[in-house]
Amino acid sequence: MSGKRKDYISWDEYFMGVAMLSGRRSKDPSTQVGCCIVSPDNKILSMGYNGLPRGCSDDEFPWEREGDPLQTKYVYTVHSELNAILNYGGGSLEGAKLYVSLFPCNECAKAIIQSGIKEVIYDCDKYADTDSVLASKHMFDSAGVRYHQYHRTGRKIEIEL
Image 1 (cartoon, one colour):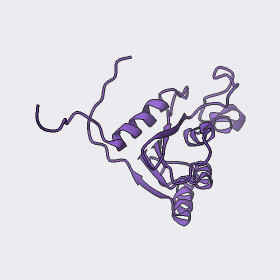
Image 2 (cartoon, helix red, strand yellow; image 1 turned 30 degrees about the horizontal axis):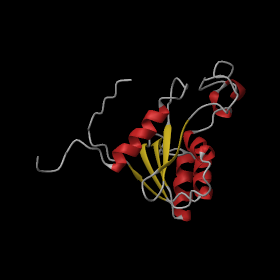
Image 3 (cartoon, helix red, strand yellow; image 1 turned 90 degrees about the vertical axis):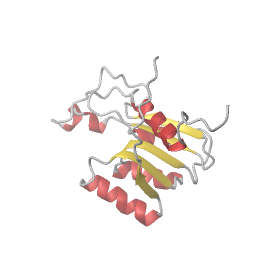
């Protein structure tokens, strides 16, 4: 058989797919976000998704988006990017790339910068006009962290589990 196979996926498709699949582990009923951190030589270093801290039951804490802050998810959940950084047990993330399904908030941007990650590839930027994301982009620009949107290929990959 001659010629190259065309049914393989690119590195970007692979890592964004891993990030999106990781997000499916989230118990958040409104927003499932996943993250995959990759070494400069394309090895997966860590993954994460948005959820409660270890030991905190998904059934005991709120998932509401509005109301008294202590009755909403926002003060309790750990974002996918921070989870992936905290899940990494191998030392430095210097020079790594981070694939994430939703553009990082300002708090995650700080952790990304501090951990030495140098590139962020995101799928969705639906909060682009919020102060949090504007602050993230300002910090990334200042710290030399590159970021760009993932370009969807339109390829549909189905996995039966």
